[in-house]
Length: 307
Image (cartoon, rainbow, N blue to C red; front, side, top):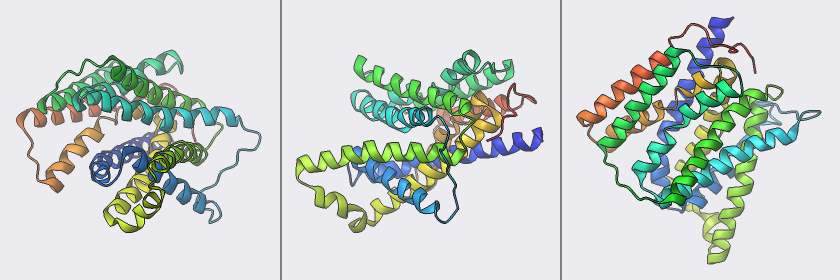
């Protein structure tokens, strides 16, 4: 049973990281047609509509009766709401390199919190693997160049995003009373409510509400982008990542996060004909080695909790 759970958790973690990795490419495409709030609003609105449609079809099942709903609402407040608020506005006040460097620290924060809160300390091999994979990510980031914005508010917002995502992982692990679909449904609803309302306010203030509602119907590229981000990331990738957290623990599941950067780089090479520099290649090798090392441990304390 342990081996099957472990293998399933690893597969879910890798699959979720791959899906999130392609999100960078689609987000870049979507930003050519709309503002960040518009893109986020439609992303979570589509995600909520899809999950709601799945309920009567019995593809997904949720039941919040006699469960601590307040705690799972807190989960949605952390991710996606607080995370995306910190990330979006943090990136606007800093540089891409700085933002990528700070966001890449999430596995370290999760590792510390997992040990302190969940009493699931990482093995020395896991800790070393995570540090090596982060060294690989930093190498990839440095290869693209980093300039300093010295924006204290920007740094605080980015670290808020890191903290939000880290506590989301820990809280998701603790809320074993909720199934994976129940967690993701609340998270998607929170995103749709907050970012949908923000997008409507943005367009209402500008007098462009009609354009907001027509955008997915008139722009096929934007529609494809929203469909991928909503179904591929907001729904499927979150389902996979939360399932991975439940099966193999917080620290080990987040060890796959650096793979999103590798997928993003390789997607640029294959789809956008970008070239990989020597430093990027070195970073990719280090990242893969670190992820492999972090998952080489045969046993993880507390990893047998099921969904």
